[in-house]
Structures are given as structure tokens and as C-alpha cells.
Length: 207
Image (cartoon, rainbow, N blue to C red; front, side):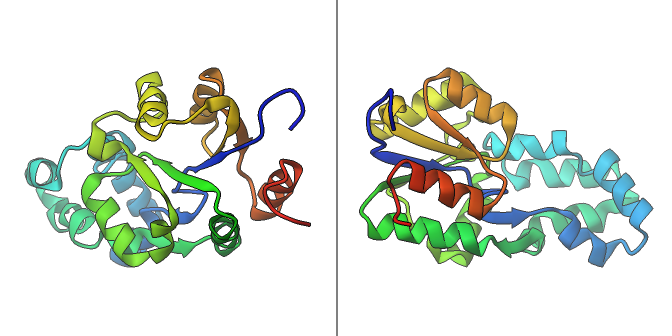
């Protein structure tokens, strides 16, 4: 790419880029009424509550307390841990194919994800393509989450990255801005087709 060094490493966000994750996939099977399900996800198992898992807090610490606070939803709360894998809607096959192509071309590949340590281990067991990476920085394992600048510093130092020569792929624009501020070459993920065009532009895959 003109104006900077050639890309020598690619970093992928995982959720929303490689894996489709949404708790609604599970809870639509448990709470049939859509409005009731949305209230549960807005008032009980909220995004703010789940965020602590991305920082390394275990289900053993969080599930019993939340179930006790909402006894009428105790079974549904426990399902968050017991049936977490049912929140996966599958992989984005087009992006996975691009990941494999980069692997075949011996590109250095890394994952950067806000993901709980326990559920990350399950995801790796379910999605073998996650083993394509040379390394992964997982928020739940390090206790720091995007968009904290410290996360990106740790990403750089852990894997010896030069941000100017690293393409960072992310669907969350807040996280993407944080990566750009640290100097990464960034791509806002919207589709595998657009990502393929970006990779071709950098000469990382062939036409």
C-alpha cells in the first residue's frame, strides 16, 4: 500500500466477522414471546452484565447471584452458561475462506476479541478454523477489553506487531477507531466481498 510499509500481519476480530453470535438464537427457543425475550435480555441478562465475562469473571461467580436476584428467571439465567453454544448462529463462511487463504499464503494471523475465557475455549472446540491463528488476544484471558488502549498495546507487544504494517479487521466502529488511533491499518468489516477487495488492494490475495 502506498504511503506505508507492506502489510505483514492481519488481525481479525471474531464475533461479527468470523462467527455469528447472538443470545437471541438461544433465548428464542426458551422464551417464545419475543417481547418477553427482549425484556429478559434488556433487564436480566443484560449486555452490561455479560461484559464482565469478557473481562475474565467466571460464570461460577455471576450466574448464582443473578439467578438469586431474579428467581422467576433462574432457569433462563442458568441457560446462559449451560447452553452458551446455542447462541452461535454459525460461521461467516466467506470470511473463513479468506482466513484460510491468508493462512495458505503464510500471512501472520492473529485474533483480537472481547470474549469470555470459558466460552472462548468452547468456541475453539466448535470452530476448528480458530486454530488458523498464530495467536489470539482474548479479553477474558487478559482482563482487558476493547476499546481500552491498553488492549491494543498488549496486542502489539504480545505478538511483536508493527501497527503500520498490520491490517486490523473489525465490525465494531468504536473498537476500530481505537485501533486506528494506535496506528493500525484498519478495515471496517461489512461483508466478505468487501474484505476480499481490501485484501486484494493490499496484495495479500490474488484476483
